[in-house]
Image 1 (cartoon, rainbow, N blue to C red):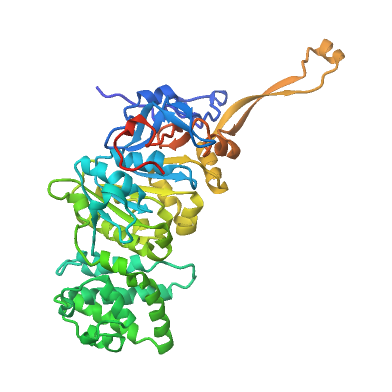
Image 2: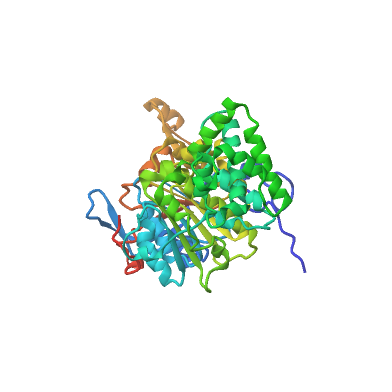
Length: 519
C-alpha cells in the first residue's frame, strides 16, 4: 500500500488550492523564525559529538569567572559536533578564541586524516602528539622551526616536484597547479603579466621535472635558480641559454616535450621590454624559493600527499603546514603549493576515507585567491574531503572571491559564528536568521468622555514582523566578552542553534590530551 504525501505540508504561506493543504487567506501564517530548542539539541543524534565530527561546543555548561579579566570559562555540559558530508566554515573575529574553542578541540578528537594550515605552529605544538596517540602518522612541515615541545620529532620535508611523475597523463596539468600556486593574483585589472609568469613557470617546472640534466636536483629551488639566471656555472644553464636548452629538452612524452618548447617560444618571442617585465614579475613570485629554510624543506621527500587518502603503514595520516606569522606575506605561496597539489591528489585517488580527509584551513585568507579551490569547492565532498574554512569576517571572502564569495557559504553545511565585529558579517547573519512576528501594543491618548461613551481604552494591538536578531543584538550576545560564551551555529534544515564555547585547556573533556598550555 502506498501513501500519498502532501508536498505542501508544513508550508506556512502561499497555498490557496482546494484540498488537504488548502488554506484561506486568514489561515496563512506570519513569519516565525526562531532558535532550536535546547531540548531538541540534547536529543539530536546528528548533533551529538563523536570522533567523526568537528567539535563545536557544549550545551548546559556552567559559566565560571576566568582569571583573565572580563572573561569567563565554561565547564561541563554536553559536547556538540558536526559531521555530515558537507563543508564547514567558522567566522570568528580576531582574538576571539577560535583556536582554543574550536580548532584545537577538533584536532584533539577527530579520527580522520587531516591537512592543517598552522600559522605560528601552535596547532601542531599542542595537538600533534595527541594525533599520534590516536594512531596517526604525523608529519609537520615547518621550514622556519616554529614548533616546540615533543611535536618536533614529527618535523618533515616535502618536495612539491615529487608529484610530477614521468608518464602521468596529468603531468602538464600538475605543473600548471604548481605555477598557479606560486603566482598569487594581484589587484591589477590586467592579468597579462601574471598569466605570462604562470606560462613561463609551468614550462620551466616541466623542464626540470623531465630532463636528464636535472637528475638529483628536481626541486623548485632549481626552477627558481634557472629563472633567476643563477644556476651553477658548470651546468652552463642560465637565462642566456635557457631557451635553447628548453627547445632541445629530452622529455620522454612528445606532448610534454612540445609543451616545454611552446613555453620557451611564448616567452622568448616577446619584445625585449615585455619580456623583461614578465621576467621581473616571475622572479618576484619565485622569490620565496631563495630563502634557505624553504629550500631545505622542499629538498626532501619524507611523505606523500596521497597518503592523506591511502594512509601510510596502515595508519591514517595527519599533516601540518607551519609558518610564522611574519613570513606569511612572503611565503604564503608555500601554503598554496600544498593545498593545490593536495586537492589534485584527493581527486585522483578514488578512495573515500571514513571519516573524510579534513582540510583545516586556518587563517584561510592568507592563501590569497585560489582558482583551483574555488572551482572544486562544490565537488570536494564527493572526493572524500571535508573543507573547513576559517576566517575572521565575511569581508575577507568578498575581497578575495568577488562575486563568487557566496560559493563557499553556499557549499557550507555548517557555519559557526562568534566574536563578530564587522558590519558585513553582522548584516549577513541578521538577514540569514530571517524574520519573526510580534504582537505590538500601541497606546494613544483617550479622553474620559470618549472612554465612557465608546469604551475605547486608547490601546491597539498589531501583528508586525521584525528581524529575529538585529545587528547590535548579534554583536552583543555572540561577542568576545559574552559572559555565557555563546556562539551561533547555522546548519541548513535546522533552526539556528545557540551553543557555548569552551577552552580546551580548562575543560575536563580534553584534560591530559594536549602537550602545551593554552595561548
